[in-house]
Image 1 (spheres, rainbow, N blue to C red):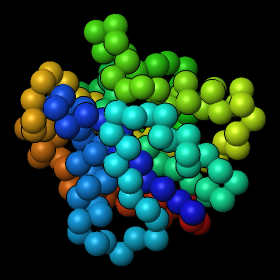
Image 2 (image 1 turned 120 degrees about the vertical axis):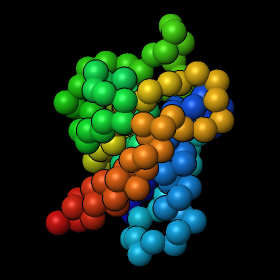
Image 3 (image 1 turned 45 degrees about the horizontal axis):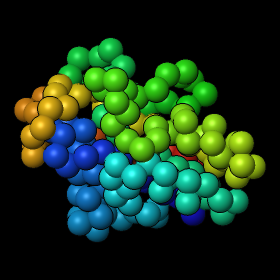
Length: 153
């Protein structure tokens, strides 16, 4: 099975991009052969998808990686050594890199994982996306769907 997981918090502006993206894909009933799941800020829920049956996990999240607001990049966890922190507080219960380390410690299988990171403009308390992310939303949807399909090849 393959999973598209959206992380984030609807009340924190651009931090909701992962949630909004998977919600959109699920609502549009796109021709997909993967499951789109809103994880929210319960990062520990990601561990439930670390199974022998999981062929791929694509995580979509707002990540400050030094790009311009709205930029995005696709990478695997072994390409980075950092943690997602905002104002000294992790924005999720467990970022994906920490969760992978935890899974290793408890001998849980680690499936192939990719991360679609979208540079936020603002993660302040706000119920919507910034104009920078809103204007590129369909581009993110396309990138996520293409990434899931490419992994099949």
